[in-house]
Amino acid sequence: MKIFGHRLWRSTLMPCAYGILTGVLCGVFLTLFLICSKVVAHFAFSLYEERNGALAVVCIITLVLLCCLLTAVIQTLCPSAKGSGVPLAEGNARGILRVKWLSTAAALIAGSLLAFASGMPLGSEGPSVGAGGLIGDGAARAMKQTDERRRCMITGGASAGLAVAFNAPLTGICFALEETHKRFSPLIFASAVSAVVAAVITSQLAFWGFGQIPYLDALGVGANLCVLSFLKPTAYKSVTAALAACGTAALCGICCAVIGIAFNRLIKLLSRLFGKIKSATLRLLPPFLTAAVCGLSLYTLAGGGEASLAELNVDTAAWLLFAMLAARFVSTALASGASATGGLFLPMITIGGLLGTLMAKMFSAWGVNDAYFANTVILCVCAYFAASVRAPITAVALSVELTGSFVNLLPCVIAVAVATVISDATKTEPLYERMLDDMKISATPINAKYRTARGTVTAKSSVAHRKISNVLWPYNSLVVGLERDGVEIVPDGETELLQGDRLTVRAEKVNPDAFISELSDLISIEQ
Image (cartoon, rainbow, N blue to C red):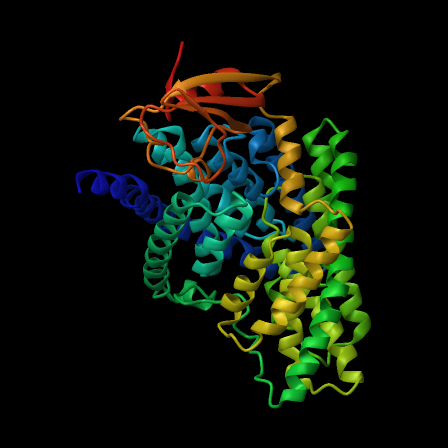
């Protein structure tokens, strides 16, 4: 009974306890960040909306250039704060990257606020994920936790960041399993669930409190907010309508896959081109100026896309939708390719929404009832996200939580499946995986040769009585040998480790010192 209680505490209760702590911290700090983001974004949007005369244009361009210069300074001082915070959180959680959590979090938040102030087509959810992971990292370091537990707290913080940004707890949990680690583990699941629940409860209380302030209430700050709450899917009134919806979902998946693949490949091309520019200021200048031109041409193009989404309807002129889609597509790709600080979740949702509106207009011309307009938009939002990020379960969960409805669930699953299959068949790199690969190149130098270490599972080892697949081993490492009671055993993911087991662990292309240090937290290393 004592052993069972110890295993329960170590495998479930302890990760949940640290996850709750991480979630509360993320809930407090990320709520403040999101409110600041909303205030700054509203300020920038108002500048573009109320512009009149040459003087206003000059002032806006001056502000944009100043933001560009300050962002360049921040990224020069802290290169880890470039781009979306999602690859940073993923790399940190997998043990690939090691950064100074406090300075990186401050740089990430400051850089994203500067991007919002200039009207860049970027969102706050990416920096929320990155900052959440860094908060978990900082909390773990302050409490001097093991590397495995630190990575769990980073995972919980990153999941909490996404959940708080969208008020979408299920999406945050799916993100931890499907995108951050790309596998299921009870340890990862417990860390993510506890952090997300604690963060969402904390943030909702904080949002409710700040929502009592008239100014913030007018900006939409409050509890239970959904990004796409204005898109209410219509229930299908007959079997024929439901079957037709499945067909349109497949068509939406095909179209979104084509655009999503083009989006990823354009960002990859631009990243290579901008990567040749040594000056951070010159690298960031094109996306900042493009954002200014787009905002001055049509003020609804300023910012992450909330204004564009809110005005979507089937009566909008097709040429205007095409123009908005092209502008969003190019400006967002430029911003990402140049590594401007800011998230891509909301911009991708906006691009998917614009594409969905065009598809809805086409279906309307074919005789489809306009009452299903919102359904089509939602299909394209989740399909486009799945095609670009290659995270189908997260995409389905996101579509449900952003609309607060299960009406469109089956068509969404079909659209996401079609988009994912096509994107995978064309061997298009998932968006965040490619970004993480770019970050690994500039990370700490690694040893190109493999490194092997041997050790023993002791009574104090955290891996005792756990399956190999449920352990967060050091990055790029593999258990290649296991000796138990003098007998060699071929290890696999389902092998349960017992006290006295002698393990041989091999890692390739890693920092040798970091590998040994992290492994010694798990087993007793033989000198």
